[in-house]
Image 1 (cartoon, rainbow, N blue to C red):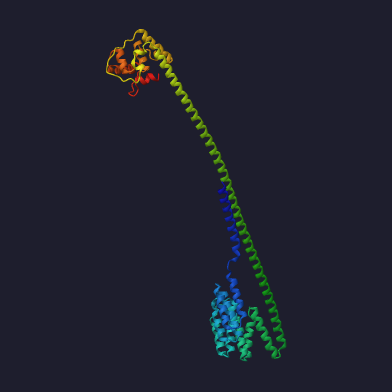
Image 2 (spheres, rainbow, N blue to C red):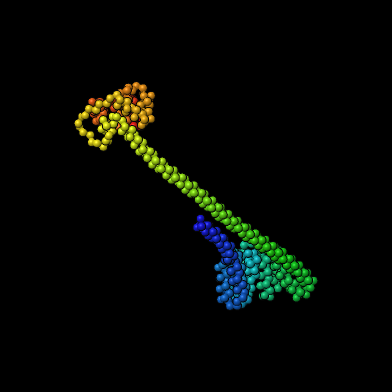
Length: 430
């Protein structure tokens, strides 16, 4: 009982400790996005190009989204532009690839010609723009293309061509491109003395800027709302998970309690059963002892009865005439002696047998009316244990004839047909 309780308590402790360990280990899961964000901030903190590229590679290693990888390459290109390394900037602009979103593609379309122009390779800048225009995957790149082409012509002093491309960019649906193009057109017209047109373009640029700011604020608010919604959902899932774990722990505790109660009840029933078995065993032992005492008493009574019968038999007048009654251990000899029993002797034998065995002759006559007086006398001699030799001497017949006489009485008078039933055993138990 004691070891069973200790085992159940140990099982409960292990169950609770495992649940606590799971709860404590959940917040320690690695966050790839958080690690990537740390390395991405390092890109803007260092000044050496080798360090910038090393942190960029580490950032891309923790990112699986192509769009985010394109943003990292775009950021490295911007760092290269600020450091004046235009060749490396072009390499990272090309690495942005097809995974970049529309805004990144537009920025690349604008920035790559500026990189070529920064190196004085204006012809390559024009070819780059034409290549971007020919290879564009969507029409959203066209406003950026027009803005970049206008910037390129403005750098080379071709004002009319620059104004034409700025006007195309100002009419685009991209608010940011339209705002930048409108401000630059306003500056060109102001330099030419067209103040009214410059004012209208500046006003248009301000309206576009205000709409863009409102759009960014709405986007930021929507993103914040989505983040809060996502955080609330995560908190709800975490709370649900904790509730489930608490429920599992509660169920485990209930199971342990049920097992404990079952074990306690089973042990109690076992003790009661053992007590009942012990009581039954004690009762059986007491009964056995009483039976042994009764058997001993019965044996003593039988011995006394035998002694009384022997004393009765010794009082018979014919007791000394029958050698087997006087000395049962006497060895039989082949000497044939005539034993003559008178009528008084037979009456004395029958009376003695009736006294010793509860009216043996009367019960025998009632049970078997076909018995004659001689048959009853013969049965009395067999009952008191007269030997075959003495019977042969009494009836003056051979021992074989005595055995035949026993068989005839057994079958004809008593109707006993079983071979294992003898006349001696039948009369002894009658």
